[in-house]
Each structure stands twice: as structure tokens, then as C-alpha cells.
Image (cartoon, rainbow, N blue to C red; front, top):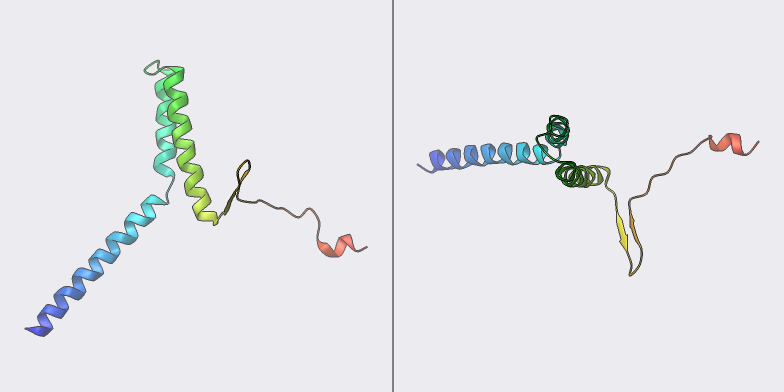
Length: 101
């Protein structure tokens, strides 16, 4: 009886781990958000929604996309009373060895 119970619990834990992994992967995928933005654009062009409604949808969707991307890139946020810095992007134009010449 104990072996059967441990197999059942182990199987249930495996399934729940897979469901959790799938849910986390879906939360990090911005494909659905891009489709929502495209749908809103099409509805605007067809006259189903107003410009103001589109702007509100666009603002919300783009904010969600930025949030997903910042989590994926491991961005950091520094906040003070009057300044907020979110993430840092840096590029190098030339190799360091070229700068020494």
C-alpha cells in the first residue's frame, strides 16, 4: 500500500510541475500580446473602435510587453525621489584593442 501511495504522489507531483512550467512559459511569451495589438489595429481600421480606445489598448499591451522583456533581460530598477532608472543598455562601437592604437 505504501509503494502505491508513493507512486501516486510522485506522479501527481510530476504532473503539477509540468503544469507549472507550462504556465510560467506562457506568462513569459509576448506572442498573445502582439496578437491583441494587431487585432486592436485591425478593429481601428475597420471602425469598430475609436482612436482613444485603441490608444488605451496599445498603452496597456505595450506596458505588459515591456514588463515581460525587462524580466527576461534581468533588468534592474533604481528609484529615488525624483528619478527612476529602469535597466541599462550598453554597446561597444569598437574593440578595446583598437582604442589602444
